[in-house]
Image (cartoon, rainbow, N blue to C red; front, side):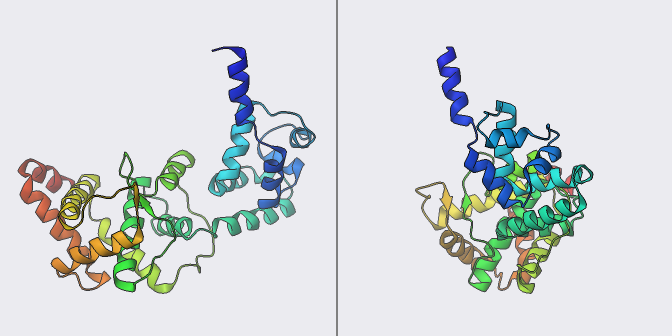
Length: 275
């Protein structure tokens, strides 16, 4: 690859001065404190604001901070001793406020806190997906705005999944009042029900659901699984299986798993060992 091409690719990735300013404003952090949190020289961020071009490594770090409040929160918590207590408290409040803007992230953090962080990103995805479905079908409204997606690894909220895998899972002391009591009840119901099953069982249940979905509606024309689609499809499936309220969700999983076991005797032995 020629030097000109390499230079072009690098320039396309360089973070802009405005983006750096947005980071400082979004997380209510000063230029020098941010540099200290990142383990850089005290004047590094100042120089970037004055026009110096960050290295590719530093650019990627700043871009990840801009895109992921959870990542910045981890950095802040791990390096709080490097900045003043006043700067730490101001920035902590700001990043928590940013995180609270997305009910998907709030819901994920609620799940993590309930599990005391003893949960993996794939389990979180399943709990979020089914919680959203139960709310759509039995409350008539969503818990969070984001639509699910058809992805290569069956992760409906892929960006969140990849972020949790990369940044790790930890409990966070945050105000979860953005979730209503009934929304928390639904999430708790799903989390408790899914807790009885391991990844093989959940995968088997998903396989049965995909077959049922194909029987009810034609395939989607895009990779987005809209909330209307989920409400319609799962509403019909719940009706067929006599699932009349969200509290019946454990019974739904049992029925689906029984169907999966009935269709695959080899899988049956593995599931029983797993449970």
